[in-house]
Image: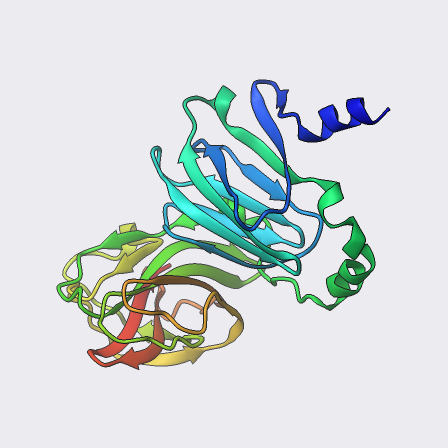
Amino acid sequence: MNRPLMLIVFATVTAFGQKIEIQKLDRNKITRMGTTQNHLSVIELLEPVTQVAAGSSSFKIEWRENKVFIQPLEPEATTNLFIWTASGRLSYELVPADSVQQMHFAIDQDPGTIQARTEKLVEHATAVEQPKVPAAMLMESMPVKPIGSSKNHQKVAIVLQDVYRKDGRVYLRYAIVNGGRTVYLPAAPEVFTLNSPRAPQSLIPLANSQLTADYQLKWKDQAPVAVVHTEIQAPVVRPGQTARGVVAFELPSPNEQGVRTVVKLAFPADLAGPVSAVLVL
């Protein structure tokens, strides 16, 4: 009776050509996961996810309870991925699949790896605070397009990644890239709306764009915007590292007809000066 069960647990299942794999909890193993652009892959564990970290912004990665959703943003995107739970760390290598038929549809965790911890996991699940970002942001958010280029790469930079609007709020995902030589201590950004923004070219076609430091933008003054939720991946960003975050804020009312709403995110300064990002909505 045991032999057929083992075949089911450790087999790689193919559904419509896509693979569903069963994974054991092993801190020393790196699991290879094939992904495809415009397709969603999921890692489903047996306990809540507490933290996720990836080495590249070429993937859109979200987690909800015990599930991690992965979608590549570029055709040949590759990176490593770490997932932490109460039982330990799981390591993955995300690579482009040769075809849709060869991609991983899902990787599930072997139920036998943590059955002895079931009671503790139930208690832990009730205590974990779940992210307050809408699940629809994973598939319905719009990528942020950079306009211009930064002249100073030896400092901390904020790269806006994608934006989503719902119920009068703006949800914005960003990356903190430490190009400097010292440790950076991030914090939740302050958000301001820029009144009467003016630029050499019209801002109307620049919706969902980030204006970089060399873009010649001027404005009359600025007003604070209510921030309703923030998430930061790591409390410290070391030189050469990248950390990700999410901020949600109330959608500012347009102060002028026919003018794009422009907001500025102000982060703690680094040794090179102010750290901020400007977004055209």
